[in-house]
Length: 355
Image (cartoon, rainbow, N blue to C red):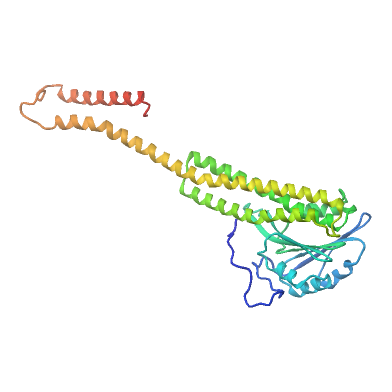
């Protein structure tokens, strides 16, 4: 995963409400798509001007306006002004270091959260901020880049009229987008779980210095995921308990489902966090055990050579009246004695289960 500890995305010296993208630049330009539908009809198009979005504000159909890229401040300001967004809301949208939260206004609800997806090339986890504006008959979503998102299943359900999404209102569309983001967390958790299993096996078989770096990277990723997902529980619970006229009672049960999924993701992250914390101890223990095995082998070799070195030293003194000095088989007798000592010690070590 890319570097998680980011510098502040706020630019000092600016008046509050000033629209200026202060996050990492992830795309060039801006892309605006509109999906307008009801139970009987559907249309989808890409527009170039903000004014083309204006007629959909008061239409009786449900409209999803998706804006990819946050660099065209003119379009952002025009859309924000026409849909009566507070300047501070636009300021939060373009400053991409926001904590997951939701805010209720008289005519709309503002929701911000993190979206994660896997980079297809190297399976790296990518993250970006997604902001949702829920109105009476529209949802406006703001994304940092045009590189992709997790909303394709929602688009397909709208296009093919599968499920109940074409029969429901804008609040159900907002739920569907939230649910798609939370469901994508499961894919991230699955990938992280596989990585943890690989590291656990590596720790047991052959821990190496790069393994320690991998553990630290996983720990950093887990902290970042926890920081991003934990506040989402408050968002899902707050939307479920909201008394806003924009959220129908029939949608509460679906928001409760998002809340339950969020809790499951948080529990999984906490489990991974505990496992990764224990991996460092396992790594150190594995290295210690490996070192103990090496020291045991060296100690056994040294212990075996102590008595045979003594025998070699005694018979190497070359005194004139030394016993067996002129014996024909003295050399071979000394070697045999050394071999007998080695076999005796190995047998003793084996019985003691030291080897």
